[in-house]
Amino acid sequence: MKETKEYETARSKQLQSSEAAVIGAMKNVAFMASHDLPNSIMTDLNELCKEQGASHLKSLKCDDHTSYEHNSSVSEFQKAISEVITDELVDAIKKSPYFSVTLDESTDIGVKQNLIVYVMYLVKEKGKMISKNDFVGIVHLDKGATAQNIFDALIDLLTKRGIDCTKLAGVATDGAAVMTGNKSGVVQRVKTHNPGVLSVHCIAHRLALSSGGAADSIMYLVKFQEIVNALYKYFEYSPKHANCLKDMQVILDQKQKLKLKQIFHTRWLSFDGALQAVICNYSSLLSVLLADKSAKAAGLVKSLSTYKFLYTAHFLSDVMHYLCRLSKSYQSSDINFTSVYSLLENTICKIKSLENGSGENITAFLKSVPNAPVESDIQGIFEFEFGSHLIKDSEKQRKEARDICIQFCEKVQNNLKTRFDPTGDSAVLTAISNVLDPRVIAKLDEADFRQKIETEVNVISGFFKKTNPESNLHSETFDFFDFVKSNDRRFTLMNSVDDMCQYAITENVLFPGLADVALRFLVTPVSTVDCERGFSRHNLIKTKTRNCLKTETVENLMMISIRKPAFDFPFHLAFKKWVDVKKRRII
Image (cartoon, rainbow, N blue to C red; front, side, top):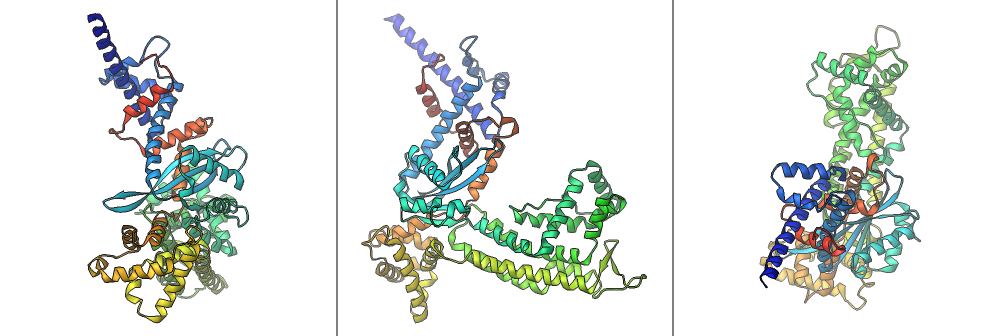
């Protein structure tokens, strides 16, 4: 009996020692994954920890052949940690009344097409329904990125996670034809599967397409982008030229130095940083180019030292300031549908006001140059000095520059209005945003305004008849307005659409139809920015030196690196999952 008790005590101590060793190893694995470090450093990291006093890690080594530091062991630890994170996420999604998905497809360094999926869901915090958007998985599209394959991959992933697809309320995509095709796109297939789904074309993509499309339709601006990119490559790919630029900046005592940037057509709003760098470094750039007698440098000098180029650069810099500010707002993690159009309208007004050349950069430029072309010593040649360099000038250049910039402003405004015109599901979301605006209630006594709201309510009720044919959303909405108005104390505290949504949800017994609409509205994403960030994380994990990583491994690493388990993470649950997979020698 005594021997049995001693054996059980010894066994218990061994199990505790083994668990502590494995959990210690899992913490190191989580650290490695969070910082995109390769599995190969596991042994060295453990040795470093042992050297620092983490003696419990010594128990990892069972015998000469089993140390649980091999690549396969590290992968098993990653999987166990990832599963704990996924279980917690899925539990939260299951508790949410509705959820939405954001999708994007991309090709990785190994020339494999992958679908990344994020899920937006609602959690109750301090009595309010708060939306959260989290990475839920990545799928390798081994049969190609067709609409059917993407749809199948999405449904299969959600089903595998145990998520009820009937609660799907919205889908956000980048607007690619395979996603939004009217007849057989992914969105249409999802709507066939679930008619109440609201689809959204990413606002950040629409903004980039509006700006890039405006520039691509103007011949000189296409050439302008080529000049800026040629300038970038001249210095970026030559250490000699880069060093010459640094030396010249010192000689000219240039206070502000900005790194030259490339313009990417798919990320057209990178134009702002590129323009700022050219304007800031202009004098130094031209000095270096003039010192180089190569044909390439001469060609760049010819393009850069013109009134037309300088006017365009300074004018576009003013326009891009507002477009990039809007882009940053649209890429914010807390942006919602209610602020999309107010921010857009403000930006359009700002761009409209720049057409007369009143922007900060263009004003400063015009003050530093002659009001009209000045003829040089050579008859018929018009030049002026700018940044210690002679700039070619003419009335023709000035007129063309002004016309190009005004044309660009007009095209950007038209593109923004066209691409953000509320049609289809956007019209439904706009109607919800307008109807649940607290300012509506104060104006309902105005006949024209009430008629407008009647139209908006009809749009909402017409769409949601698909999900609840028996609901009378029209009368319920106006009853809700009366109910809110009668509660003066509560009404005075409501300042936003979100507040109205929260109130409707709170009073869901009285207004079940409107509460359902409010829940769907709160969980509908407005962009796929998180997917883009997810692929950025994916590219940090799957690199040229790690291009053979399996999709499952990449998914586990992404789950860990995005969530970054803290010290209070339940590693004991990960340990249990790891133990349950198969018999372990260490146990």
